[in-house]
Length: 113
Length: 114
Image 1: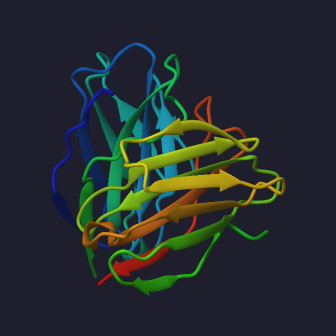
Image 2: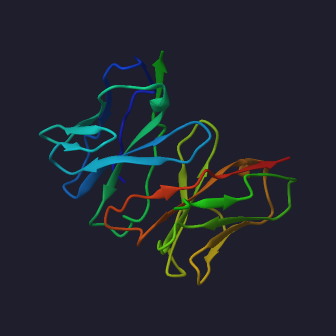
């Protein structure tokens, strides 16, 4: 599975935008970029995913570099409830193992009031 | 609508014992996956089941087994427990488990092996 690299931790202030980076220099053409987050004492929660174009949903935006070797998850206005571990995951839709998610350690986001 | 439910929420066992963890998927979901999350790490894939058949297995010993029932609920069994099996066990469900479907996770079962 292609690997991703994320900072161990990041800090932000409430109501400010947050940009969470992810590097995936060995990404293949059939890898989708998925983001999940895990709030304290809960299971992971889907946030967003994309292939080449930037994506928006009610939770966040996903900005994908033109060469697809990196991406950024954008939380437009962080709230205290966004404090979580954020995981960037590559999912190969062409392979036989696209049924599983391969998690790294993720980025622990702290939001200050 | 009920989300993915797991039981029990917490469990304490001793080395050598056996444990059974249970998972009920979201109504209509036919795929169930199991993940193990050790403290400080991301979840690691153990199994996926779809329509009662094992579709995939992660790098776990044969002490770990699972099954899926006709109502799509699932059990994860671990035999001969080791201290290293202490972890949060997560269940996730989805419609079919592939094609970029998002997975819906339960809150997990926290297993402590003493």
